[in-house]
Image (cartoon, rainbow, N blue to C red; front, side):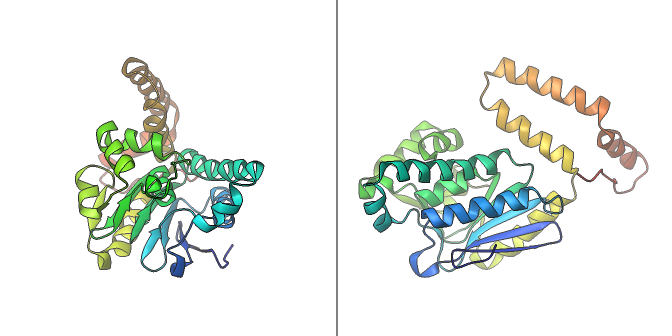
Length: 262
């Protein structure tokens, strides 16, 4: 799975996907999107991989799409639609996979890079990373979910501020407004990502998958329906899945739980 555009490493339950064109700030062109989609499909099918860390080489997580390539792609409407379909398929897979995805935002995270980050389950960032939409700075529009996921992440007012002005914010401000979960000095970022992965790996794999489903599906429902959905799923979990009782038994016996592998 390793190539010019993407490096994939795996071990100990964790896969690290590194965008690998630092000289161009890791653009998400069609080839890169296809490489990421193929890689994540393979990882998602590997039961040994439970956490995926996504990051970029050099000064950027990803500064977005390849604007030079768009000049050709826009003249080929069918190809441009296929590119958008592939990008949407990648982000949909990230959201619906049982693998927990963590965006490790090491630097510039703009436009398509922001859209990739928003589709991950969690995001942590260097405190001096630059994060923003930036599409309108070059007459573009967010086409991989940015106009929809960003308001859901930080509210309509803040999202429109970032989309309409094209400005970027640093990692510390992104943490303050809830765009990323944590911000820290760059030197601490990857160690923190690995520690976060270890914390996730200690949890019930099946429980994590259901918790992810609860949050994702509930966000698309009105509150009354979402509360009923939560109650029904939790009832089924508590009364049918062995990990629910194993967690209680481990607590009572003062030991680490031994969860079922999936």
